[in-house]
Image (cartoon, rainbow, N blue to C red; front, side):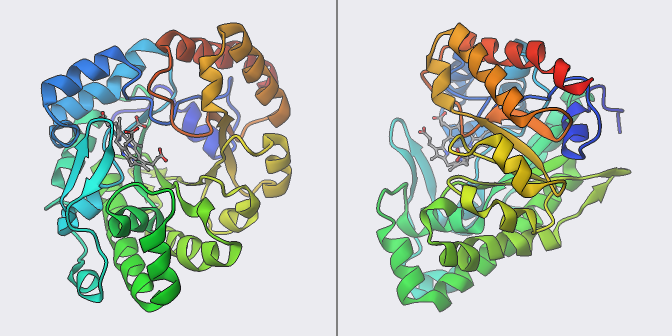
Length: 354
Ligand code: CP3
């Protein structure tokens, strides 16, 4: 495989010295970019875009053409696994994801199976292979999946939710069923991420977007436990290089120590945490990724630059920090403001790496 020309993202994850703090943005390929909207319109639907390896590759590379980013992330979605399980995924414009066959009963749970990553999900692996080829060693490629709990919220609710009525209903009244669903999903995520690694993903990230809505007890029993199961089953070295794993629980700031103890290499943190405090809490165990409030990108470029300086100073000297937003970039952000953010990280971070 081609040598990596810019490996600062992987070096920071390993806490090895870097010249400047590497940076990328969650959801960096997306609707805030006019060129994304154009390709998306050509593709027809969002899932058609995900299923076309050349178009998925094109939108993955779009933000890298605009900004000096230090990592690329596979263009796909976390809901590909439940779709492959037969739940019937659609994305209606402005409405978010919807499943035509949500998982509500014991019979529904019993029908779930572990999809073949080179079968039902081969389009994702084809996208990974195409992107790796086209990146040609420019920056590392991040593969990803949702956490079992986060996937379960969509699978049981059938859409996004504010109340978690069905998914928490199942968790409280039928914990046995919920554990069965989560176990099948964890097995699916493990084989899916391992296939992404074999196809060329150089690091993998698990998005636990909804872990933060659980009590500390339930977080450990229904979310963290299954992320641990995945980490224990992942390929950790490929092509002569370590394959780091990152965990991100939105709203999970109180559990950083527990997450660090899973044996992952990095933790994504949202903007509700002080990154300096987080660094003290996890010590040398893991690298940290984050954690600028994505809404800062609505402010002026001057204000954005100030925020970048503050976060760099709060993390302090040395490696182990990957600059990112604390959650995905919003669709109405001005792309020039995103550019000001990336440029500020490049301008102000070298002084912390002397
Ligand atoms: O970061 C990247 O550039 C890679 C692509 C990526 C997408 N989704 C593309 C996408 C990634 C990493 C995801 C992950 C994802 N998807 C998560 C976890 C991360 C997070 O944000 O918490 C979640 C919860 C989903 C589920 C999902 N997919 C939702 C809720 C939506 C609707 C969002 C909305 O604002 O309407 C999606 C659709 C989606 N996934 C879009 C993109 C670019 C927008 C769809 C479109 O173009 O119409």
